[in-house]
Image 1 (cartoon, helix red, strand yellow):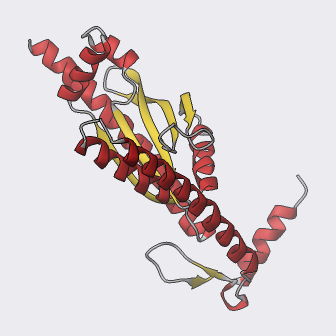
Image 2 (tube, helix red, strand yellow):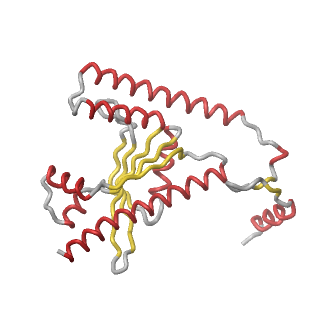
Image 3 (cartoon, one colour):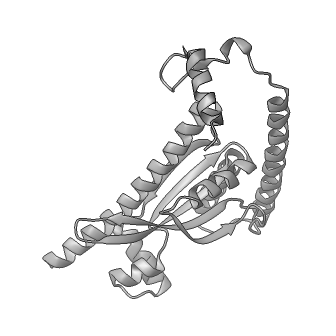
Amino acid sequence: MRELKLELTRFMMSYKFASDEMLTKINILKEEFSSIHDYSPIEHVSSRLKSPEGILKKAIRKGYPLELDAIRDNIQDIAGIRITCSFISDTYRIRDLLAGQRDVTVLLEKDYIQEPKANGYQSLHLIVAIPVFMSDRVQPVTVEIQIRTIAMDFWASLEHKIFYKYNGTVPDTLVEDLRQAADAANRLDVKMELLHDQVVALESVDAGDADLFSFDGLPPFPLPKGLLDSFMRGRTQPE
C-alpha cells in the first residue's frame, strides 16, 4: 500500500510538473512579445489538473485498465492548459511557436476552428508530450492545450453552463440558438482582426521614441546612439 501511494504521488506530480513547464514556456512567449513587439497574441492563460477521482471515473467510463501505465497511455488530458488569444491568426501563431520548441512533441492536433463541431464549438486542440526530469527518471508526460479567441472562449463557457443546467439534454431551440451564436462569434473574430490589421497598417513610428528601450515594469530609457552604431557595424562585418 505504501509503494502504491508513492507511485500515485509521483504519477500526479509528473503531470503538475509538465503543466508548470508548459506554463513557463507560454509565459516566456507572452512576456517576450509584450516587450519586443509591443503586442502579445496571448491574452490569458489558465490551467487545470484532473483529480485522482476524476481520472479513475474516466478510466472506468472508457473501459481502460486501472493501472497507472495504461492510464498514462490512454488518458491524455490529465493536465490541461487553455490559452486565450485576441485573434484567429494568433491561435495558429502560438501553435507554431510551441510546436517548434525542441522538447515539445505534438502527438495530436484537432483544428475545430477550420472545422467546427456540429454545435458550433471552435478551438484549436493540441496533445503534446514534454519530458519531466524526476529524481530517478525522465518521464514523457502529455498535456492537452486548447487555444482559442476571446469570442470562442466566451461561447464555450456559455455552452458549458447550458449543457450542465440541462444535464446534457439541451432543448433543440437552444441548440440552434447556440449554433447561431457561434456563427456570430466567428464573424466578430474576423471583423475585429480586419480592424486590427487596418490600425497596424496606419500606425507610424514616433521618432521621439525610436531610441527608447523598455522592459515591462520599468520606465523607458534611452539607448545611446553610439551603442546602436557599434551594434550595426558588428552585424555588417564580413565573416
